[in-house]
Image 1 (cartoon, helix red, strand yellow):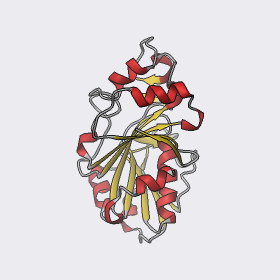
Image 2 (cartoon, one colour):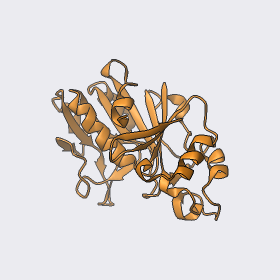
Image 3 (cartoon, rainbow, N blue to C red):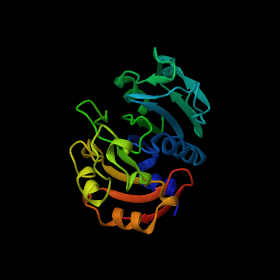
Length: 235
């Protein structure tokens, strides 16, 4: 089963504002989902409500890049993708535009994809009171977690957790349902998805752990590969 076609099925009337949160493959998922939606004839905008890697250093595989509000004058076309964020003093990171601009752009594009938090490239993220920045009008929220964190200590794999706890079933029972864990801010969306990324390398024990741990009942979960566009299990 293909991950991106499965996510696309949850988009109603080819129109959606989609937040991507968590860690362990958010950017890969975002840019590949954008490519898939573009291939289906949709116009797609990639942006952020926090920070993303600068397009100078990272190829988002888009047709156009904007760093200011001239993006509002762009002649939006079907089967086209655009990246938009603001430059910052940190040349390696671009930052969120004004949120009202993102809302305005969501009316111009078929689909707007945005990263709603950062995890410093770690596979898990404990959120603070400031994040994730999920817009109230979001249609879909996708929480991403890297499967390769399983069996390791939290301080090695989870941004925001400096403890020596092992990331196992007991840990995930708390993390996936916690107010500061992967499900944070998902209540704002009509469709809620967990993507356990890195499934191509998951062991049978990993699969059992993910299948048996506690998860919010209203969130569909996929063991998948954002890189290979594959789903290995649905929970």
